[in-house]
Length: 117
Length: 113
View 1 (tube, chains in turn red, purple):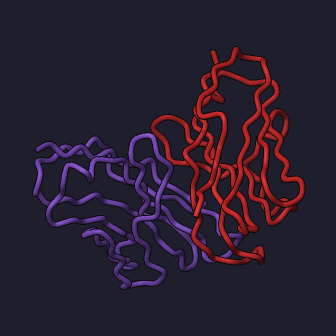
View 2: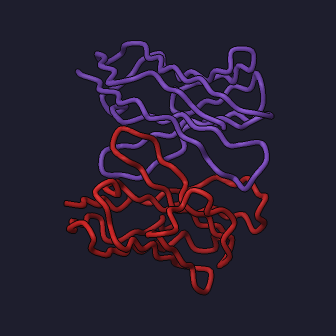
């Protein structure tokens, strides 16, 4: 079974530029998560989708970050404009659960390492 | 809010040594507790979990017991191998909500032959 796919694996941009990350979850997984992992810290949830609807985006900096999951499959996370403090690894995860209150295991992709100069 | 605190690393051990990585948590209600492992260049993988007090999670020789009285979930392994070198994350899932995970800062383990 193929795992969670993410691209690109690495990205270097200048501050104030825009960047987008792509995630393709495990086939059949209804729930998709984006986490931000700053160096030396644990991952922090940015946004959670249930199919193509947002369940939790309470920690997403909405003035510069946006995410979408059209058709309830793959997803993109965008930062516009980027700041130095956005340098981090962005992890995508998915889980099977069909209902928002489900408790299924999350499977993580390899992440995208973003460096903002 | 809920939080997880892990011992700082790096932890450096010789092969076959005993491993303990401490993890404590603060949470309302009755969270589930997890250990994830991240090998170099790979994504996070679930190592073990426990969903209620006194449960013991185990996998690949690793164990952790959910201790509600001390709000702890320490990771142990009796004899580590070089291949166990990785970053280990303790995490909790809130008892309510939408399957959100809250992670500790991670502990890097280096095992030398």
